Amino acid sequence: MIYFVTAIGTDSGKTFFSAILTEALQADYWKPIQAGLPRDTDTVITLISNPFSIFHPETYLLKLPMSPHSAALADNININLEDILVPKFKKDLIIEGAGGVLVPINEKNFVIDIAKKFNANVILVANVYLGSINHTLLTINELMRRDLNILGIVFNKSNNPETKRIILEKSGLKCLLDIKEEHNISPEIVKKYADELKINL
Image (cartoon, rainbow, N blue to C red):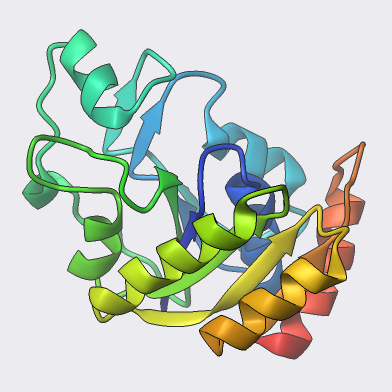
């Protein structure tokens, strides 16, 4: 099965959760487009304990930490959706997006078009802050408009039960995981959340 991890914005916790999901399923991991360093793939590698996951190279590795379309322009590269080909995997594949769903990768396509191309099952990471209800519901509406299969929501740094409640009620989606604020992210922390996530998948 192919899973696509996206978020309501940049720095919402996609990489942390991608490591958790990769560990839970002992899956392969792939970030097709990486803009800027450090590489998220390297971060996930340091957080995985199981010996089975394979980490596939990026299709596009861009130098600047910018929107992919801007970073590609700076590198004199044109990102072509047709050139993003799913790598060979045996069991499950975790694909991590870049930024939010409507981050452009070129003049025509958005990040979420990668999930659509591979008919991936989408998991939405929503960090909780003032305004995140609006951002989360707008993102969900866009995913639904594109007829993508949304498996559920992961709340990151969730310290407001009412925010979580209203988002789940209005969206009708399932909470797959509630991640607390973690100051030191380690393989042990990832494994702990991975064990919790297995119950809800």
